[in-house]
Length: 224
Ligand SMILES: *Cc1c(COP(=O)(O)O)cnc(C)c1O
Image (tube, helix red, strand yellow):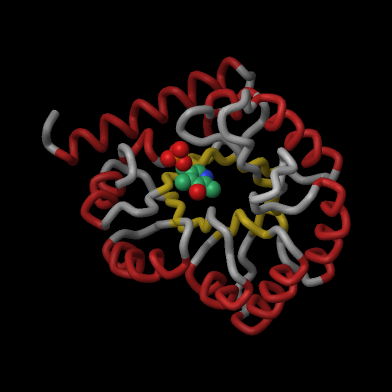
């Protein structure tokens, strides 16, 4: 299994099996959980084998990096869905709307208004998640829980399709309570999507309702 294409296919199959098994335990359907393969920092040569193995949904955390890598990969492969999982600056909103099929990191008023304008201008309605600062961490992106209702109202007023909530729990603590809290906030706000769970904790997230798991290193290996 030193052939990179075989290794990628085996790694993908392993993650898909774990998703399916966990969904089954939780009484959910595997197809209700979308695997977002987070390919940030990895070059096209590392991504192509995963596409060849059937993966279609990918995540990047920087607009610039995605703009360099993905147009050629998309040209060569039908059905690619590209998700932005990282922080977005308002001045890159238009580029992001043009490039991505889903944005997971809407977290403040200024960005809501920039995205609303960008979607108006381009005529592209890109589904978005509102990112919640679920552990109330000072340095972390995401809107404060207390600000969530007003931010959702602003997004609605700007005609931005909000499909759910996203979080990155604090590092080094048991993530389950934070996933459970995000699930409750989504329910309280009538939202179906929950983008939560990464390489180390996606099974826990699925047990607690994740609809989108963002998996990088478990698929691609450690980032350089
Ligand atoms: C990098 C990243 C991931 C993937 O992390 P892994 O631990 O490599 O699976 C998921 N979500 C976000 C927001 C990220 O930036």
